[in-house]
Image 1 (cartoon, chains in turn blue, cyan):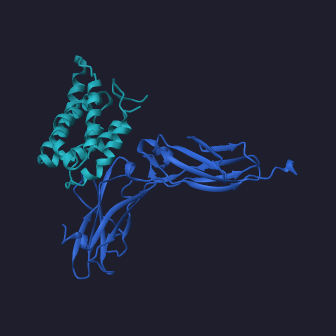
Image 2 (image 1 turned 30 degrees about the vertical axis):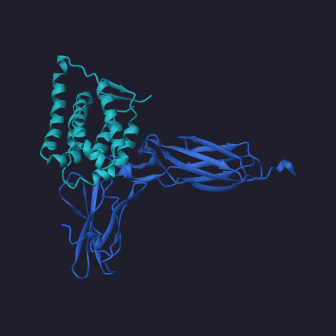
Image 3 (image 1 turned 90 degrees about the vertical axis):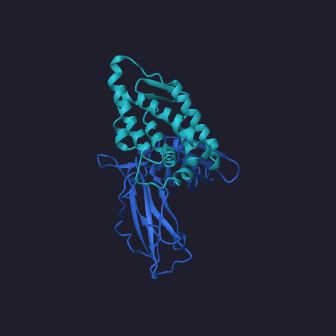
Length: 213
Length: 155
């Protein structure tokens, strides 16, 4: 049921997802006030029944975590928000059709950058997700995106730039000048779904060469 | 390079990622037109019931239906919605896939062909239960479901 012009109380109902953490967000409309309350429902595409999201009923905040309810990689989902103003106005607005694989974005990786005398080692830590396999174990991004790879870049403060790329999680940039500052950029890429994370950045300085004294 | 392996059928020369990118650009526009969120044409039960051996016959029927019924009758809408370029990419690649599918028609394949056709008829039946425009819009909007299913056969 859509009340009067829904956008008067409610706008931009959408899923915001990164690393499969799925948050429904919305904005208030020009006609809403601070005591307007919101209730969230969700369902799988193709089902007729809407399900109320516990914890997001008659709330004043404008977001709701639907990660648990929308955790099947092979499904598509809808959510809808009903706004109720103190003066008894109601409005309902539905989200776009949400599919995890295509709609989630990828966060920067977690990386340990280790400077040595003539090299910098980079260790990329696996990224767990809230998605579980059928046997219950938690899946990492690598489990989910079969073609996932890492793109690494190391720059000094001038023009010197090195690139490495691959599926493994340990890399080492070698042949560097001791006692020099470098900036590392490390990104996750999932080519098939055209996904690319923002870079993780680390600033490191190679160690002084003890033989140079 | 990569190819589709629908049962014993092999299809090379089609980049599934290109199809996904083409659909991705029209997805929100088309799906926003589908106001019936309670009906899904390519239901899980249909797709899960298609065995590997049946997949070649099933995809052939489905893609033919998309070309001859869905794309053909949705064409005018694509100009209205300004999604013609993506739509052409999808259409052309479906034609290539169908042209390269060579399912065996031997007698012992009869029960497999029959079973694959039954699954297709479930899809077609759901399509026919809807008003034509709504059915066309829903079928186009469900191409991410179709492409996701096709991915399983892409190696």
